[in-house]
Image 1: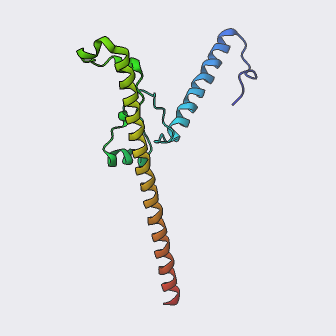
Image 2: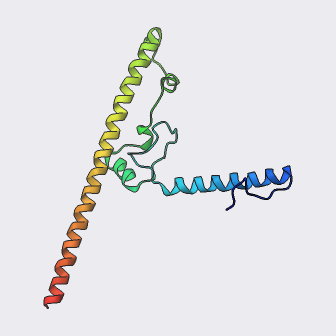
Image 3: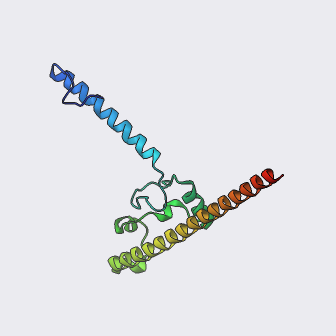
Length: 148
């Protein structure tokens, strides 16, 4: 691929066309790179705003094991919480209510996230143990064949 500066464009229209080609190619490569990177419990954006965002099979399985929906791991701002119904008895102390609600929600979100991360670690540990057992069995079988 030639750089934009090296491209032999003769007029302004050609420059615009070449610029569009480079832009499309850059966007395509960016999309490809994002698709190749798994989004897990360890690297997701808690403010992404999408209800389904995890692409890592272990992270998804950990959430299922814990009975936690992906959207429950997302951050909620006070503005988002203010959009929810505020009981009439708290209307006079609206901001204090929102502060407490935001603090409560964030503590619960962090707790759910840590629970899922622990479940994910257990899944990884079990996979490693299975791999070690399989390697041991393969070694034992190889030894039996050689001795047999």
